[in-house]
Image (cartoon, rainbow, N blue to C red; front, side, top):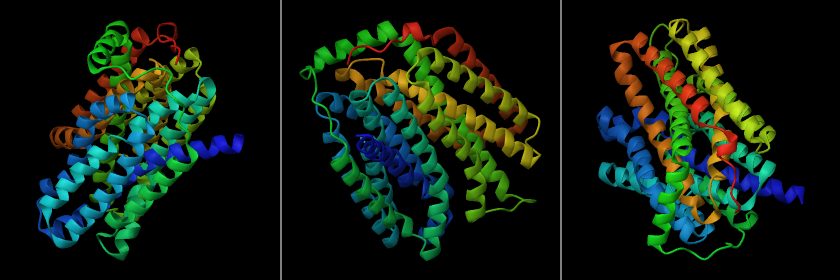
Length: 401
């Protein structure tokens, strides 16, 4: 039985891993893409940005569909479309068709909306108490692990030929689809699907009753990822410039250090909290405090590269403490018939946080790096204060599913 449970966990972990690989694996080949297709930097960046924006826009609608129908009925076709659109994107890159490339990437983003966010809702349907937090911690760790390996994997594949990552990705997608199909047995719904009008009415009621802490949790998760990937983008840019001039696989390995901190912290947190509200609140506050303190350290050390990497790693550990707790709290906030929309709205904000980090960090860093890190410290401390005020276990009890 335990072996079957871990096969299910493995299947769930494959979904966010594939989600990340489909985007981050392309980052190392963007310079080659721009050169081969004669694109501007803005045009090449849209290959990544359009994916994230498309996913963020469509996630709420697909969340509703997952509440209306079965979760696997959304996840499996989404994985199939995700992989097929990846093949189209590869041929578009090979043929030099920019408009087909970005159209297929937008379609991939739409399909991505039906993967990891819906998997989170399905975890809430299938598991309770410690198993739920453990599974969600594994999902978050897998998400972080994907971000560790994807730039390195993309760089290695590009050594074969620059567009190889486009064609390699569908194989990962097919493996995830098979794992979900064979290992995850979705439970029957305990209630009949609601008509749209009633569904919207109930959703409004949920946010009237729980909106203050839910929106706080949403924004805290999005901010955590905004800070993490914005700082990593800044570090990536810093490493490429003199006197470091580090690029390619070595740069990917250095960027993997903070992300590895997130992976370890996320896994251990999900395994240990056992859906204990007091433990979750404590981990959230410790995580936000660690992020705030680390960003203060970054403010005074961003020109000392090794110290700077150390503080970024500590901040990533704080993010790893934070996210599994938010995932568990949000997933358990409502019953099964509304879980898809609640988790999807959260995932949508997370996508926007990841997408907004690099361009905003780049824009602010060009003006004043000191001002940038002062702003980050203010945002992290504000999130900590809101969490202290609004996130309480007694107000976020898990309803009957």
